[in-house]
Image (cartoon, rainbow, N blue to C red; front, side, top):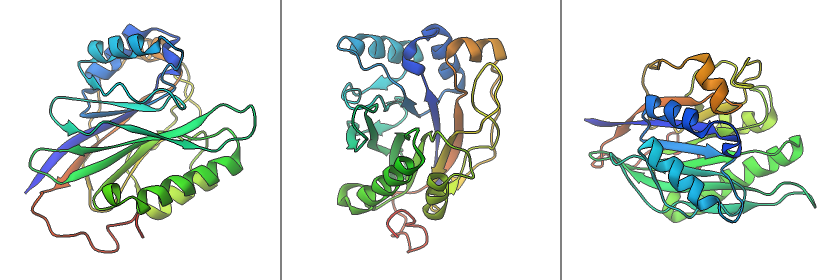
Amino acid sequence: MTARIRVASYNLRGLKDDPRAAAEVVRRIDPDVLLLQEVPRHPLSGYRISDFARSTQLMWSGRTRRLSGTGMLTSMRVIATDSVDRKLPVAPRANPRSFTAAQVHVPGGRDITVVSVHLSLLPDERVAHTTQILDELAGDPALADGPFVIGGDLNESSQGRAWGLLGERLRLASPDGPTFPAAGPKHWIDAIFVSADLTVLPHEDVALERELLSAATDHLPVWVDLEVPTSGSGPADDETRAVAG
């Protein structure tokens, strides 16, 4: 027996465009977990994020906006721990970076570690950050034992080195295709990767008009439907524990 979960990833561009359009996109996708990038970080942005969460009919832990703007929202269909930010080193005066992680319990299934990332604009930093993310997750006893989902804005194509590092440990789950810019997508830079103990189900299209997507933000959302092993499943073997490998 298995449980199911839908995970989406979306770069909000600081909610600088049309938050109502972005919320409508999210409601139509109806994810269980929404991985976010470029969440507003100014001192009063908590109110905007809370309003956005309510308009999407999702929940926000309220603790994931201070370091770099990654975060996540979850539905009432799952139970999530408070998400936490983990800082990533950047060059002096560069934009701050972090990743956001939480554990999500899917009723009837094993707990899943979900991670939102927004990688650097610099190729070497993207590689260093990806390596650090994978190593930190593998070394955290609270996170390393179980299925993994890592998704976000990678700021590089599938030919990039950081993308390749993720592909060595995990497998690509979201469909291929350009995700940026939303008004006329040309670059595939947003993706979701999962560990081998999660089964990727056939992708379900959602009716999303181009005008709605381009009004919402400058990225297209990506999403995946996954089957999760039941909580009574035995320990994953070395292959399925790809992140900890």
